[in-house]
Image (cartoon, rainbow, N blue to C red; front, side):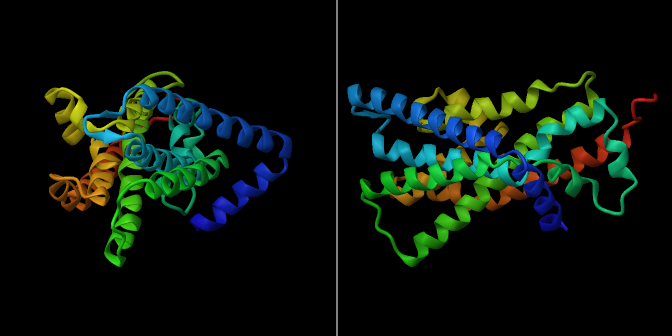
Length: 257
C-alpha cells in the first residue's frame, strides 16, 4: 500500500515539471553553498576536535542522507499540523488503512532524492581521502547505519510534528527546531560542552545519526559502544513515536469542536 500511495504522489508531481526542475536546481545549489562554507572553515583550520575536513564530510553526508530520506519517503509528517488544523485528518480516520501510514505518505518531495544523491557523492569523496579499511563487515555496517540513522531522524520529526495534537494553530515550530538543530551534528560531538554532548546523546540523539556511525567506520576510539546501542535507540524512538500518535489521535476532535 505504501508503494501504491507514493506512486500516485509521484504522478501528481510529474505534472509540474518546471517546478520540479527548479526544486532540483536550488536544492543542489544550497548544498554546494553548505559544502563551500565547510571548505572555507577547514582551509583555515586544519582540524576540529581531531577531525579533519574529509572526515567532517562523512558526518555531513550521513546527516544529508537522512534528511533526504525524510523528504522523499516520509514528507507527509511535515503536514500533520496543517491537516489537524484544517480537519483533513478526518478523511484518514474513515479509510481502511492505518492512519500512520496515510500521514507518512501524504506527500512526497523529489528534493529528498536529490539530497540523497548529493550525500552519496559527498560520502564517496570524503571516504576516498580517509584511511578506512573497508571489508565486507564494514560495508554491511554502513548499510545498517544508514537505515538506523534514517529511522532515528524520521522518529524525531514524527514526534515533534505529533505535538500539534496538543497545540493550537496551523503551524508547529517544534519540527523545524528538531530539523534545524541537526545542523550541529555536522561537527564532531567532542567539540561541544558536556551538557550539549548529553543532550545530543540522550535527549535529542543526533550523535547516533552521524557521530557514532562515522566514527566507527573511521576506527576512532570510543565509538563501539555508541553503535552497539543504536538498535535500542531506534526501537525506543519508534516506540515513543507510536505512543505519541495514538495519544494524539485519542484527543483529536476535528475542527467542528
